[in-house]
Amino acid sequence: MELLYVLALMACPVGMGAMMWFMSKGMMGANKQKDEAPSAQGGSLQDLRDQQRRLATDIARLEEQHVPERELEAAAKR
Image (cartoon, rainbow, N blue to C red):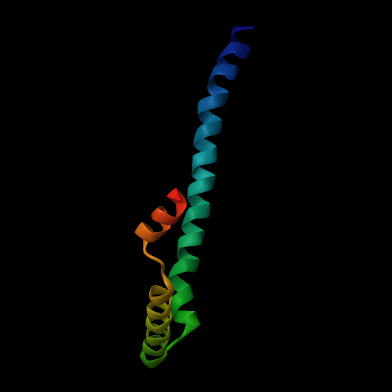
């Protein structure tokens, strides 16, 4: 009977340790895939500069369309 109590008390820490070990193995595999992704993607410096230019243009366009928050607050109070 005492052995059953000892086994029940040890099940939680042993199970937790096993779960942490398995999860850390999974995280290591995910990190390896992230490290390999940029090199597999390719993409030259010129492509990145073109993308940056497009994004800057989009941001500028959206900022021109942006209504200041003060005007929104004033409209909400009416």
